[in-house]
Image (cartoon, rainbow, N blue to C red):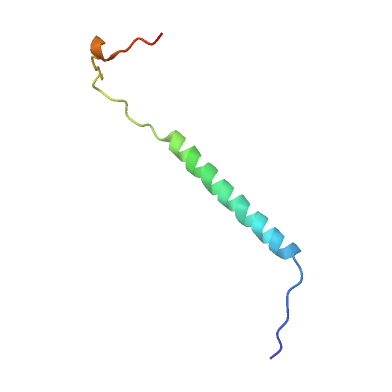
Length: 59
């Protein structure tokens, strides 16, 4: 059995580009489908009263 070294880097470069493209398309697909989901808005108004004593005047 004889071992040989692959010296062609063009095939590996194409493989990396294909993988990066697939990952990019997958992430774009996730963002697209999350945009289509209609998340409900809160039904209760959120009101918080902040007392005036917590404010400090800086001059």
